[in-house]
Image 1 (cartoon, one colour):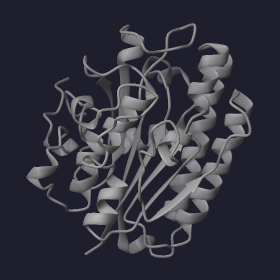
Image 2 (tube, helix red, strand yellow):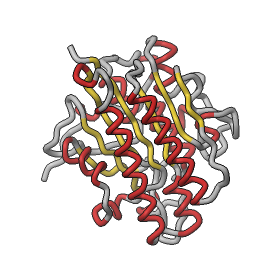
Image 3 (tube, helix red, strand yellow):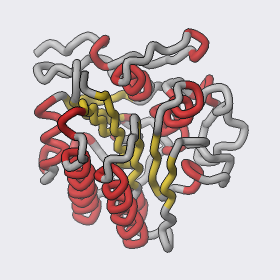
Image 4 (tube, one colour):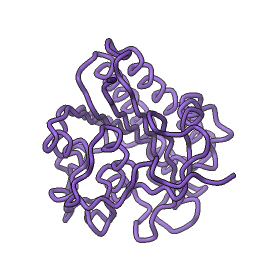
Length: 286
């Protein structure tokens, strides 16, 4: 039997409505083999990175994990851990997380969200500017691709890219923002190539999930309740994911739920996950 593996790539702040007019061949490849579908951020969830990413990687909503903003203090991640920590600590699997936003990976601002993956690669941006984050994301992609292609026994991995969101905050959602999305797609391509080039690729079955946390207003910025801000998306392919019609009523919490399902793990009822695996959701009608 092939060994199941999962890669989740989080790209911060990518507007769904712009994807059809951008050059994103790697995201398109995933969507064509599986799906790309909208996520409406739960009405109780602020359209901010902290609560959205925490829901994505824990599989539970804000009422349970307790992250309501970009300061993570007061969280309940000890009860509702991210999937890399739960899989490593409770299932004995090998996990990996990489990125450059401090509270996701370090004890800063009430973090980390990724408390105890088997392997961690944190690379700090030299400054909080679009250029600083461009360089950071490229270093993250390079390091993650190196580790993924090495053949190391990694059951589930998460890679975070933050430059798109930073560009919108500084420069709004114009040409620079669109270019940043296309750059993130090229970095996604690096990761996909790394997976294909693994020494044991022929005996592995990969599920790849790409997800964004929130959208942006035209002038850049989020945190409000507009449709642009509240619309996120998930793209995924892999075993059991149909390439015909996308699932309906996707939620951010479904990402972690599908990670467990892809690895053949039935969640303990005490985990009280709010999400469901993608293949258990009703396909959209044409």
